[in-house]
Structure formats: structure tokens, C-alpha cells
Amino acid sequence: MKKIYIKHRLLKDKLLFVMVSLLSALTAVPLLAILGEVLIKGYDQFSWAFFTEPTPTAYKAMKAVAAGELIPGGIANGIVGTLIMLGMASLFALPIGIMCGIYLAENSKKKFAYIVSYITDLLQGTPSVIIGIVTYIWVVVPMKGYSAIAGSVALFIMMLPLIIRSTEETMKILPSSLKEAGLALGGNYMRVVTKVQLPAAFGGIFTGTLLAISRVIGETAPLMFTALGCSIIRWDIDKPISAVPLLIWEFFNDPNLQDLIWGASLFLLVFVLTLNLTAKKLAKKWNS
Amino acid sequence: MNDRIFKIILFLAALVMPVVCGGIVYALANDAYDAFNHFGFINFITSDEWNYTQGNEHYGALPFITGTLLTTLLALVFCIPFSLPVSLFVGEYFKGKKIASILSTVTDLLAGIPSIIYGLWGFYTLRPIIMSLNISPQGSGILTASLVLAIMIVPYAASLSAEFIKMVPDELKEGAYSLGATRAEVIRKVIFPIAGSGVFSSYILAIGRALGETMTVTMLIGNTNQLPASITSTGNSMASIIANQFGEADGLRFSSLIAIGLILFLITAIINVVGKVLIKRARI
Image (cartoon, rainbow over all chains, first blue to last red):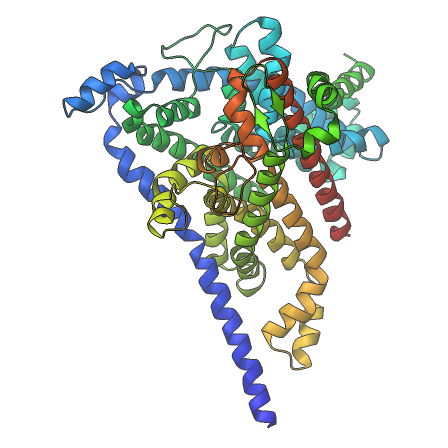
């Protein structure tokens, strides 16, 4: 009787282990399925022209498909737009985010810092579509038109919490002896923060920035009502502009351009995942 | 530059966050006012009519609130059978081993895939499967959207839960082992009671993610504006109705969409703050 009971318990133990391993392994299936599908369908789209030419018109694409050829043109307008907006957003999000992160790490006992910290969490969790409509109200309505500026503002708001968090967390784990040593050498507060603490925290802030970029680069919803999209390569920041995820959305909705979906997706996916993996690798290296 | 000015600059940078947040609330509330004023708040969230033909305009948010809650709830149900094993795998069974870090990388990559690509995959791969299984004729709908949403939130729930499971002190586990407990019993009687609140809070945060997910849901939910009849029927979530109709909306419809945005913002804000509070408590 007792023996059966023990056997039963051991069996349950084994069963749990098998279930856990099996179900864990299953989570790799969607990843492989998505990577595989995008890779297989997108691979033959890749060519020099795909990265240097703007999106074709629906008519041109239709003609090419009818003739059984590859659709001409590419996603250069989206790549340029993404880089411009990402650049402008980072230009503001980096300094402000780092300074805010320093403030939070240095004043963590203050009530104000506590509130700011909560707001940072709250903004980090805010759905991106809401950032999109708010930026529309803030920027697009007063400027009377969609623009790269509006898109950048939306990306800026999305990047800010991520940069603040990574700065704050990295600054907090720096040994306090570092700061004390700097102060003991007679450095004033600003010098100690900028010349001692910030360089020491560089690794964490850098990986945080990479992660922030990889997070916003694939965002579509906040750009739909701000940057809108544009079919030519454009460098003006006060006009509508395209972005790679916006192009994917456009291709998805236009039956004539559907063949371009996978090439653009493959490009975006490779870009995002490389950034992501690099950041995680660097973080691991710098932490150990 | 002296320290005083430096400290003021830091303070100003920190001030940006409350200003942005206040600005978001103000902008949403200001433009949502018309809709709430016209229909009344209670009527707005309990009416299931979404009619934008001129002269007959009537807007109610109930179908979309239902759509959001249904997709989120279903996504959570589908997510748990995978995220919980992953967190046990990484945090207990293979803690610190190479294979655990491989699985962590897999979930990290899943978390990194942009939502529009999840949407494409759902549309071109999952939707035909749903159709061929005769679950729903058009393939898209609340069920399809929830399935993909579930995959999207697995990484969030799993990685955070794993951290809490890892933190369970070895002495407690060893105590149970020395009394003759099997590993399954240690998990059930020691790990879950101790890490439970942390695991719970990571699911709250995963819910927060699912609530506001826009592109995936927009591409898969079918975009109809009636109250969904069942989980296989089409619908719209709060985020997807905004994504669908914001570009062409003006007047009262614009205001109603902003009002939906405000409600969504408040729901996610509450969920996120609750989640973070619970996590901070669980960490102590």
C-alpha cells in the first residue's frame, strides 16, 4: 500500500518534469514558424534596388505582377524615414532620459522622484496607439499636417521611459564608494556625476538605448496618425514621411503590393532582432 | 557651471515626465469631453451602437470594451499553459544551465518581434488553419487575435515569473527535500506559495501588455462594430477601432474615439500601477 503511494508520487514528479520540458520546448515553435515564414517568403525580394529605390506605384506593381516579374522598387523611402525619425527622437530622448534617470537614482528618497518613477512605469505601459492619437492632437493639429516631426515626437515619448529606467537602474547599482572617492578628491557634484558615474554606467545606458531603439523601430500604430507615410524618398522633416513598419502596413492593405510585404518584414525583423540580441549580449558581458 | 544649476537641470529633466503624462491626460480628456457630454458617460460605455451615418450618429463603446476584455482574457488563458512551464524551466529545473539561457533567448526574441509581423503571421498562417478547422468561416475574429496575443505575452509573463521563482531560497527547498518531498511537491508546496505573489503580478503586467496591443489585433479581429456573439465571431478592440477609424474621423466620431482612448489609457494605467505595486511588495 505504502509502496504504491510512493510510486504514485514519483510518477507525478516525472510527469510534471516531462510536461514542463515539452511545453517549454513548444514556445520555440512560433518563433521558428515566424522566422521561417518571413525568411522563406522575403528572401528573394532582397536586391540592391530593394534598399535604394522607393515604393512603386500600385499601377507599376500591378503591371509587373501581370507580366510575372518581381515588383520593381523597394523600401528606401521607409528606411530613410525610419532613420530620420529615430535620429530625431533619440536626439531628445537620450539627454533628457539620461538626466531624468540620474535624478531618480540620486534622489530616490524624495517624494517627487517617487511620483516620477511611477509615471515612468505608467508611460512605459501606455498603449502605443494612444501615444499616436495624443501626438496627433499635440503636433499634427497645430501644424495642420502630418510630418516627420510628429512621428519623432511619438517615438520620443515611447523611448523616454525605457532610457530613464535603464539609466536609473545602472546608476543605482554603481558602488557608492565610487561617488565618495570622486567627492573626496575634491570633485564637485557635477564633475563626479559626469566624469565618474556616467562613464561607469555607460554600458548599462548603452544597452538600454539599443533596447529602446529596437522596441520603437517596429512600432506602427504611433506613426499611422503622425508620420502618415509617403511614397517618395523625402528628407524634409515638416512633411509626411514613411517608415518601414508603415510600409508593411501599406503593402498589407494594397493587394497589388502584397508581394513586397515579406521583403520589408524580413528587413525589419533582422534589424530588430540583431539590435535586441546585441544589447542582451553586451549587457551580459558588462555585467560579469 | 556650478552644482546648483546642474541640479536644477536634472530636476527639469525629471519634470518632463509628469508634464508629458499630464499632457496626455489633458489632451485626451479635452477632446473626449464632447462625446461624454453628448451621450453621457454611463450611456457611452453601455451602448452597443456604433453608427456613423450622418444624421443618425450614435456612438457607444461597449462592443470595443467587450472586445478588449475578451481578447485579453482569452490570451491570458492560452498563455498560462506555456508561460508557467517556461518560468519553471528557466527558474527551477534548469536554473543557471545553458539550456535555460537558450530558452531565455528564445523568449527574448519572441518579445522583440514587432507586433505588425505577428499580425502578418497570424493573418497568413494561423488564419487559414482556423478556417480549415471550420472554427470560423472568415478565419479572423476574437479567437484568432487572442491566440496570437497569447504568444506575444508569453515572454513577458514567463521571464518575470522566472525571476521570482529563482529567488526562492535554497534552504527552504532543501528543507522540503530532506523531509522526502519530490520536486513536483517542492514546486507546489514551497515555490508557489513563496513566489506566488510575484508570479501573479507578472501576469498582471502581461495583461497590461495585451490590453493595448494594437496592430496584431487590428489585423486579426475582423473589424466589425457589433457586440461579439461568441469568441469565434469578429469584433473590434478599443485599440483596433481607434487604429481603424481614427484617420477618417471628425466631429463627434473623432471625440468618441478619443473617449475610447481615454478609457483604454485609464484601464492600462490602473493595471500597470497595480502590477508594479504588487511586484515591489513581492520583492521584499
